[in-house]
Length: 304
Ligand code: BEZ
Ligand code: FE
Image 1: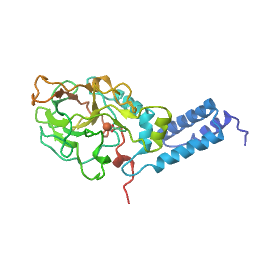
Image 2: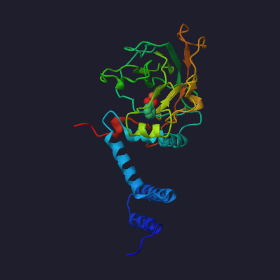
Image 3: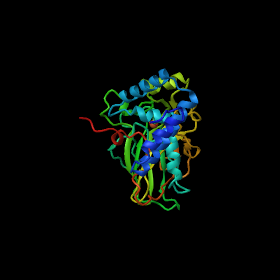
């Protein structure tokens, strides 16, 4: 038995957890306890504040549904998702590999298949039609044949299909397969920037912090091919006013694009076009897909 002062309690907790057989769990939990205790000491956390924090995390959990992952949204607005992405990129992305970006909460498995050249704007066609084209390459610039590409974005009103009244209808998303030379092209309408979901505890926090809550206009793209790490990325439009202040920190300079007329090699010279080549990194031994983001099907138990 010992008296636990403000440092002694940390030592005692670490000592009790020291025999955890799983080495990674032992490492992660010891670091979590050290940082949590340091945090409480740094801000001189009061009992009321501690309770308010517990109530907040409870509300975050209660806001989660099979279609909404409020905890990942919290991680996103705190920059933790981006940090994990950056570290994951540093550990295995080839030097020439395309940078990743957040998967976000609006990815859906089994989007409809389209042929190269089709438009993903099936139900909401309003907006400026554009073409996106390029090649899927490996780290050395060689074509990767037949890569699968999932594409999803908001419509011209800034809404994903999952946010529509009838969320069962898929729109503004689809799957393409690059050709044998790794080439692809598809049409869509230029997306606009949109607000992250603001009607829950994360939105309340963002408002209290006087942040705008917006994401700059972007198109999400997931590129998958046998033997390569899944590339989860997004292309961001340079002309969006919030390009430099994304609420979830997803933008990288190398992912910023502009739709322009007269882009050389465009398969649809009649439309404003974006050429973007995606470069995949080889999958490391034992590595799974490598997606970092809010894919509810991976983080939520099945309903029922
Ligand atoms: C998105 O890009 O879809 C997204 C990412 C993180 C939080 C909210 C939305
Ligand atoms: Fe998005």
